Structure formats: C-alpha cells, structure tokens
Length: 337
Image 1 (cartoon, helix red, strand yellow):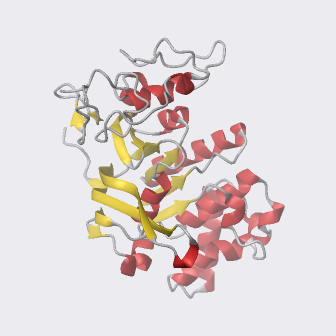
Image 2 (cartoon, rainbow, N blue to C red):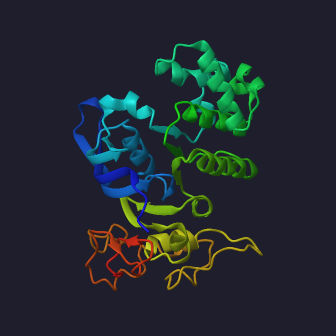
Image 3 (cartoon, rainbow, N blue to C red):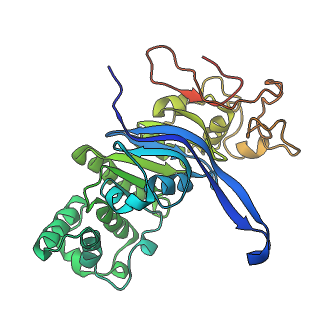
C-alpha cells in the first residue's frame, strides 16, 4: 500500500539565533538552533515532536508557520512557505499555543475573538461570521452562551477550547499544538487530547503535536520524531519509538518516565542500555562530566555507549526497519539496517 502523500515537507531546514553578548554595541554571535531538519507530515496524520526544553521544537513550529527566517525549504500543500505569503498560508496552517490565557485578548468577548480571523481574511458579512462562531463553539464542546463572556470568566480548559476554536475558524488542514496541555490539570488535559482526536477524525485534520511527554505523544500520535540539540535523532511509528527505541537519548527519555504501581505501561525498549536503570534519576546516572567524546554525535558526552563507536559519530538518519515495515530512522553510529 502506498504511503499517504505529505502535507508538509521539510528539506534541510536550519536556523541560527543571532545575539549580542554585550548589548547593542557587542559583537554578534550566532547560535545554531535547527540543523538540517528533514521530515514530512502526511495528510490526515497526527505527528508527534518530542524533546527537552531548548532543543528547537518551538523554533521548528515557528518556521513551519512562516514566523521566522530559515534556510532550506518548507513545502505546505504543494506551495513553498514564504513569509510574504503568510495570510494565504494562514488558511492552511494554524497554531494552538501552550498558555491559553496569554493567547486571548482579555478585554474582548469570546465571540469577537473568534470572529477576528474572519475579519482579517476579509469576511465582511456579520451574519456569516456569527454562524461560523456558533458552529465552532459547538465543535469544541461549548454552547453559544460563551460568545458573550470574556476570557477571565472561563476556566483554563475552556480557554484552551476557545484557542482551538480560533485555530479552526479558517478551516485549516494542519494545526500545530505547541505544548497545548502542559499548563492544564491532568483530567482537563485528557479532555483536550480527546478533543484533538475527535477533531482529527471528524475533520480529517493533520496535527503536529509538540510535547516533552512521551506518554502523551504515544497515546495520541501516529508517528513520532525525537529531537535533540536541533537535530532529529529518531523518527518512526509511535509504537516502534515507544517499545523499540534505538537511540540512547530516546531510551534515556523513556527510562526517565515515572511508572506508578500497577501501571500497565510498555516494557523497556528491547536491547535498551537503560533497561536496568531505575526510572527516577535515570538521566542523572548517565550524565558524566567532561568534554564531548567527539563532535559528530551531539549526544556523545552523555551516551553510555560512546566508547563502542570509537569516535565515529553519525551525521545522517539511517532506516533500521525491516523490509515492508514502517520506516524507523535513527541517527547513531551503533545502529544500522
């Protein structure tokens, strides 16, 4: 069976943050944030992006949205992403941010906030805008009475539903959810995850779900990419990443996930070098001090198997999946087809 066609295609996407060390008169220095990212998000797919804070997840999302400059190429629904084309691209890609309170104008009513994307896109008919607001409120599980309220009158979960509604107003084909449940209570976060899943099924949406929580992305996503220091180090089907992680960094993330007594969780990854580590403090146990073993592998300093690769490193993603299976890419010198 042929693979679904990609809705978003990233080719060698890189980004450098430029700063001055001593204010306006200081020398400019560049810090690489994204390093030649290559991946695709398929039509109708829920794609997970995981990694620790500062690895470049949000920067990659901002590049896809056309909010920052980058090197490389991003193709969205057959069109190259261009910041000059931002209004056109807004009809294809929308975003839900982490903090719903800071995403909503506190002085406007919910109805006015929801109508704003339509006004920007030139929908001048008030009746048409009002009908769309009613439709979206119903879609996100809220009744029409909410359109007269202000954000301060809503709970955190209700505000996040409004943010999702704003993202849906223009009927996009892809929604980027950047840590969309991390600021919510566990029970409320679960409701929002179920809402994303329902919208995906009902509307045929593609979804890029960004999180640091592997349990959440395993529950929600079809495929997962693991990011470390601006690089994709592992990419594959969610179940393969969760149960057969091949990169030491992915294994470390899984080993650090706490397990509650009686929890029916997945076993440690097959062949994992972290399989015997206790969940609590697993990452601390493999973070030795000292210089990097070599520059080619960015995880070399922390990798418990760094001596085995003899300083070779790995600069490319290699497909280690068996023939006929979903591709499983790993950036590690100790893995191979």
